[in-house]
Amino acid sequence: MSDQWKIAVLLPCHNEEAAIAQTIEGFRAALPTAVIYVYDNASTDQTAEVAARAGAVVRKEPLKGKGNVVRRMFADIEADIYVLADGDATYDASAAPALIEELENNQADMVVGVRKDTGDASRGAGDSYRRGHRTGNRLLTGLVSGVFGRRFSDILSGYRVMSRRFVKTFPSLSRGFEIETELTVHALEIRAPVSEVDTNYHPRPEGSASKLNTFQDGFRILGMIANLTREERPIAFFGLIAAALFLFATLLGVPVILEYLSTGLVLRQPTWILAVSAALAGLHLFSVGLVLETVTRGRREAKRLAYLAEPR
Image 1 (cartoon, rainbow, N blue to C red):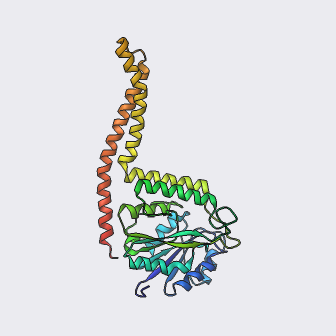
Image 2: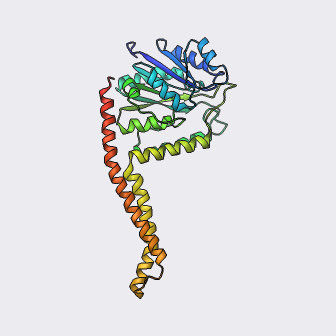
């Protein structure tokens, strides 16, 4: 790993008093020359005080939500290489040099630490990586891969090393735990060089509790994927809805047409009106998709040019 780079470790935190000191110590040992930033996100415990005593640069972001904190960090902090992790000591800080080396050797703009459970295997999927989280991650990763391309195996990992040009051209809009999905899709859309490295994923220290709600945050992430599909794949998004409407119109309209050919009468006029309306709505949505596809192409080109214009 080259010593010429200015490295920043970014740790967004909300009520991580029990774990933040251990996290800071781990990253200081792994990256002695890095500056460690802790952004306290409206904590009600002593997270900020403990982080300051441990030697981190502590700042505050009152707008709650991990996405809001990461957006603020990316805007405020100047560095050549950014190491993003959580303040709960679950990510293996000792793996950071390997992730940075992967970034350097492959001229990548993002390297994702793929989580490998180190919890008690006798407890389902392991104590550090709960069964519901693992299953949800697989489903959401598969969904993103199907829509945007298969280049990541753990889209929800919060352990990422990124280049300056990626961070400074990332148009973050998410507010919460959807931030990892947004980072992933942005990298895929601008066709940035990316890579993955397996890293250990540890149980939380005693006294530290997860802020992730499996179902509530899972649905938020699912909503983010749907919104990104609408914005980045409008033909697929609106085309799928149009196809469903055309199918509905066909199922309703064909019997009416056959009846008309047989009797010369349209006996079920409400059904026929509904079928025609569904077909027209489907045609309209498909047309919307075609128009938005042109707009999306222009936006994609603009994002790519902005990304290339930023020095690496």
